Amino acid sequence: MGATNTVAFWVKLAKSGANPIIEDVFEIDASNQPVAFGTTITGYIMRDYAAWYHVCINSNGLYINGDLVSASPTVAGYSNKRIGYDGSTYGAFYIADFRQPESDVAVTSFGESDATTGQWVAKDYNGSYGTNGSELKFGSSGALGDDTSGNTNDWTVNGTPVQTSDTPSDNYCVLNPLDATTTLSNGNLTTTGSTKNDRGTFTMTSGKWYYEIKRVSGSPGMGVAYPNVSFPNDVWGNADNGWNCDINGTTYDFGTMRSSYVQAVGVNGIVMIAVDIDNGKIWHGVDGTWSRSGDPAAGTGESATFTGGTALAPATYQQAGSVCELDFGQLGFTYSAPTGFSALSTSSLDTTTSVTTSGSFTGNSSADGPFIWANGILTSLSINGNSVTPATHADLNSNGFKVRTSSASYNTAGSNTWTATSVRKFVYANAQGN
Image (cartoon, rainbow, N blue to C red; front, side):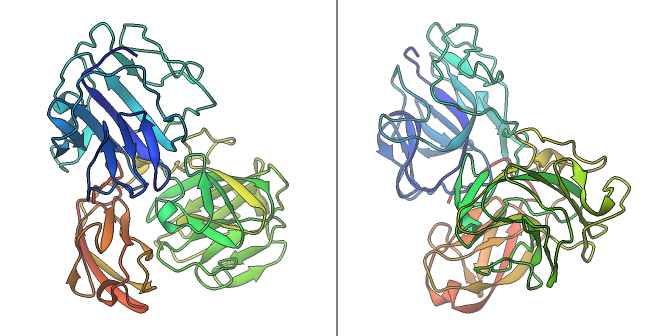
């Protein structure tokens, strides 16, 4: 990499805390604050793991999602830096549209505000890169370091980075670190735990959806759960909080256990799950064959039923030694989705304008409070009638909010109520800054 004067890229974070993105250029510190060219942006918190952030640094300072968040860090020319490693720590993130022109370029050359939603969206850069600049589109899985600026300033690829279809323009579901007690890795698509649970970042409220779960080891439970119920430290579904299957084919069906009801799954077997929210049906399959002679495309032979229109989220349960790998479509399904069923990505989601929403949650009187799914990008929030200050009382994320205070005004042990307004439902293209 030669000297450059502008750096711009999209990033989707995959872990909390210290996370080196571009060596000595941009990282997330242990307090989840951005650090650009050594300058910490105190008080700006980045811990929305459901969405993409756009980062641009030029002579004006640091921009995130098109907003100038600090004029202090500026690019004065740098070279020979690494993506995802700072010499001691590896990063965990998705990255797209990495650009570094050898000139001072305005942030509006890389993105623009959507005329309808006001969200910052990707824009193709058609300007010059100079002699030493480069562009990484990551378009070829076998040549992720290829410079596509025309300069052939290729980067050397180390390790085994994985190309996915998860991009700022088509954002995919992953497991949510804010709503998981398991250990997540591999871009929040691998889950490991001992008597632990996790849920996806997307909640299905209408339509037909398909995803796959690979049983790597142990005895996991795999299925769907209500988006805002508290998980037990046990298999969910024994109570009326969702549906899942174990490796022996026993299902836990919204409060009813059914022994040997679906196919068992072996080590490295692929569990196929199809969900029809509108008609209230779930299909289970293993390694290409649907259980109970099911036919999701025809709407017959379902493995479970529920009240149509009920919101559900992908979920897993991990016992000691359990490991699962999930694919919501971003890695390429092992088996084709049934006709009429879609991968869990924003290209398939409803973008209806949202209205004020409200609900309740069970608090824990802890600064590490619960995550609450809220069906949209929140623009304002009150809890128990008290106005929320982002990052102080709660993080306002792209799919809900995470309580961040032990104050009884916002997180009393027991029932709490909330009211929120949002931009529109199911839009996860931009992460929220807190």
